Length: 74
Image 1 (spheres, rainbow, N blue to C red):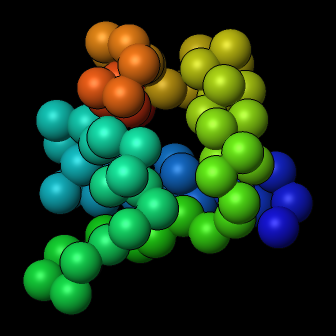
Image 2 (tube, rainbow, N blue to C red; image 1 turned 135 degrees about the vertical axis):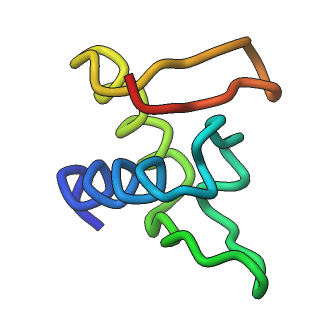
């Protein structure tokens, strides 16, 4: 999947009301049956790259570090 598409999916997922407080990486790529937010498609490395680009562009905030990072809209 192309990075621009992945970035758009990330922004859509983070715009969903369920993501008001942000999402962990796993919450972006795995959506459980009871959750309504959109899933982000792509290889994990592509999603990580898209997240880095969005953070560099100032469109998202990255809170914390390592496995516990939370991503939210800027």
